[in-house]
Image (cartoon, rainbow, N blue to C red; front, side, top):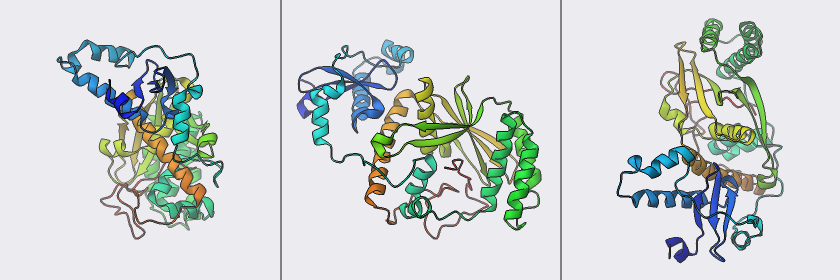
Length: 359
């Protein structure tokens, strides 16, 4: 008898198809298949733990074993019995999960859609989320925000076959007037320099690629967004960041909302995980850096499952009106450091960042 059977938990393994789990019903022993992103909380973790136990059981180092080579070829570690033809939603296990569910997804929420920017702001402070997205208080324009938007408009024009430099000049001139001319005098030249460094990368793709993920029935509204540049042929999503400070691979690895939601959207469309890469443009030094988000298929699924639980919790908080500041603030959207209501980014030492999502 397995530990799962003793504890009453289902036996969960990764299926051969990417993004799917195979589950053994502890009630009648039948096997079912279910998409990992639709599975109850914790099932991806159970599958990963089963994988680790399987790895540990071999006397041969895992990276030298035939099992590892099989995983590299098939993206699996074990081949569970073929699943039943009975739909998972009709199984005894599904009914049991429904009965034991602690909270139901909200029927409606007070937002027209979800997005990476909205989730990031909620993590920073629920009160700020309420102020901006429920009360409609607009953000005060800043030099950093306007410069980032002007650069993005130049990049979009370039990848649409237009004059990117001209688009940047027109956009930046308008923003400068909006800010009363109180902008750095050298920023026009810096912007043009950064644009040309991106142009020299010879990237290809569809700019400002809009997407919508059907999540209305689960979290009360769909998730929407726009990828800065999606190379569908090469299966790479590029996200451009304008910054005044330093970025690193470690910083890139800590970002979750944009990398996971954008790759989920691409996965839904093409059936495969794309690569996700940050193109970081430093307006102080004129330097361009590239950081590709690193993950395996298994780690992506496990982290996405955790993020899905978080998405559901945020939807419930918005639905219930739990939007007061708790004091447990998330990261600053500009510099990535711990945020507070008195927080100020140090332009000389912090990672001053313009968040790409404008939704």
